Image (tube, rainbow, N blue to C red; front, side, top):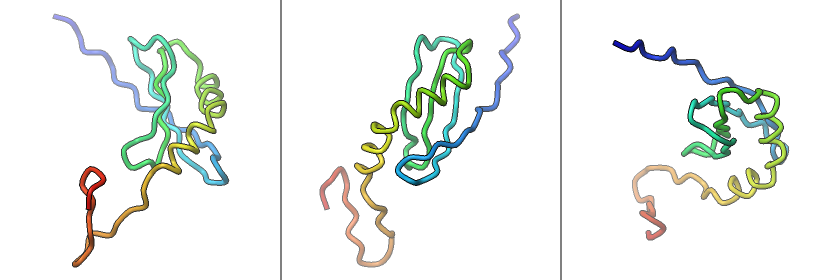
Length: 95
């Protein structure tokens, strides 16, 4: 019987993008071969997935180097639409 691996809590840092402070969640993954950068579904935080042996400093540096990509993704996020009476809610871009 194999013992389950101990789960590690994600590491959180902060990054200034376009004058706004964003949390950066650093996740270590056993099978990761390289660093991967993405935004969460709400576009409220940056997620860096990295190999287990990579350093935290390198992950933060990687996010800083890709600040332009992060900024462009944040600009592409549509503004939130309040869910209220009479609101037109687009589904897949169609009202």
